[in-house]
Image (cartoon, rainbow, N blue to C red; front, top):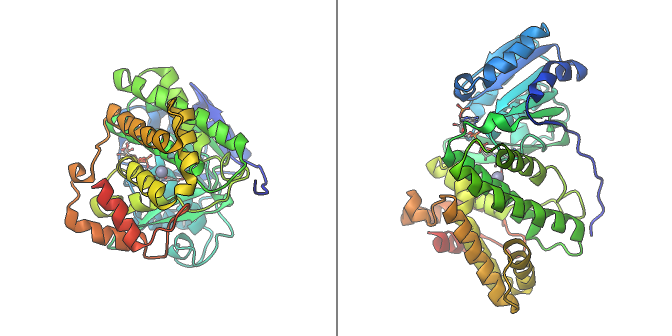
Length: 391
Ligand code: NZQ
Ligand code: ZN
């Protein structure tokens, strides 16, 4: 087990009506002039916007709005937020939405305290050294941005996704009201569940050994996602199912895995999936469902020394009773594919609109900054192999 420091610097206000803590939280963390950042309008039609501004107005907090942050947020939206922050001398950000609004706000928080181009920070050319405080009001479960230190920003003509990462970007607090997710359409709800599961699997299926506590916690959260996601297909207003999925989202990337004895490292399925989002503007969680089974089969072949880990995943998460490790591992992958089908994820990249002629380009882009593997190296040729298996 690796050494670790356990510290989750984001306070969670979880449950119905927790929006009532927004204004006092802003003041507690020193905010007086707020950038209110949100997406394309869902919060206006479902009443969340009104609840937020009632809080701000009720406490006499000055705010400037930035609306229209796009999914897979482009750096241009970040520039606009930084401009508003600097021109209006704003000292706090409230981001309302899913991962895209939250991630963009994190980059704005860092960029508002930096004199150069925020791309320097997004591309890790310059380390983040200061950031405006921010809070989030989560409206869609999935990315874990509400409790983590990362933000994913899309840059340039190729729509390359970069992760800006720093503990200063952890929200000071997050309002997590499961009722705010009732209006998320089924497609995005299920893509969010796929994203949560992927965060857990990418941390569970790693070469680290002897980390039983986080691994056992992880298995439990994965099972909670498997149990609760299908319930939302039948009843999107099932409060307990929404609550369990929301808390699973927050726990998956809050640090229980990589801070507690695991190395913080690459997420190969995410790296491969980001290229699909970049090329086809595909929803993040869908890209992960498409690639995960292929990545698993590839890893079992190229790194057979980890077969027992995949077998443990199959047995402890999906209840597979096969005693032979190699067989159990394969049954586990089949069970995962059945789960994806049960929540409406497409099973092949070709069914999701990807052309076979695009695979080489995807492999090139996914590995342009070097190998992305964890248990076994993934260079361009191996990335192409995985994409081809998933196609
Ligand atoms: O823009 P609005 O109108 O709000 O609509 C959004 C958007 O169209 C809608 N939506 C959100 N809450 C809603 C709602 N519709 C109805 N009712 C509600 N309550 O859902 C659509 C998708 O929203 P978005 O924020 O894009 O989705 P998600 O939360 O999946 O975020 C995806 C982004 O997060 C990044 C992804 O790469 C992607 O860019 N990620 C961030 C991570 C992080 N910060 O740690 C980790 C993840 O692995 C991921 O990479
Ligand atoms: Zn993700």
